[in-house]
Length: 233
Image (cartoon, rainbow, N blue to C red):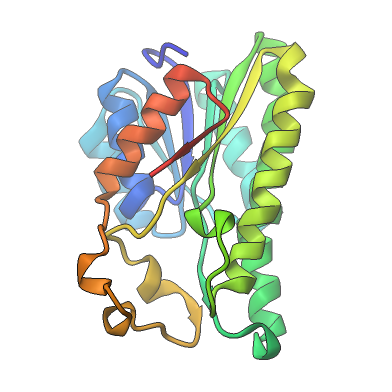
C-alpha cells in the first residue's frame, strides 16, 4: 500500500511503539488518528504531527469507546484505510498461579479489543475497495517462556485471528498482517501486570539486543507497504 494521504488509526499511540508508528506514518503523508487513554500526550502528539492528525481518547478494553473511535474517524475523514492495533498490556506469572481477573483484563485488551476494532472497520474498508490491518503481536507467540504463558496466549490468539482474517478478506482487497516485536525499549514491562521479571539477572541478558520503538515502527511501515503476512524483529 502507498501510505501517502491514507487515513490511519493507531491505537496505543501515546508512547512507545504506537507513537513511533504514528510519527512514521505521518512522515509518509498519512492522516493519523491517535488513540490511547492519555489524552494530554495524544493531543501533544497530534499537534506535533500536523497533516490532519487527530487525538481521540480511547480505552481499547471498552467497546463503546472503540466504536466512538471508529465513528469519529469517519466523521472527520470519511474513510479508514489503515488500522494498527498496537494497544496492549503484559502479564507475568507462572501458569499455576496466574491471577484470573488480571488474565481476563489482559485478554480483553489484547484480543477482544483488536477483534472488535477489526469487525468495525472491515465493512468500511470493503466499501472503499480495500485497506490494511496491522496487529501488533510479539515474539513470545513464537516461543515458550516461563512466566509469560498467559501473556503469550493472548498473542497466540491474536495471530490466529489475524492470519485467518487475512485469508477470509483477501477477496475484498483487505490485507491483514502481524508484526512480532521482541524486547523493545519502552515502558511495556513497567506497565505489565503480575509478578515482576528481572531480565537483567537472566543468563546472557547483557547480550540481549533491545530494539528501539523506531526500529519496530520502521519494520511495521515496511509491512504495510509490502502487504506480507508477518514480520519479525
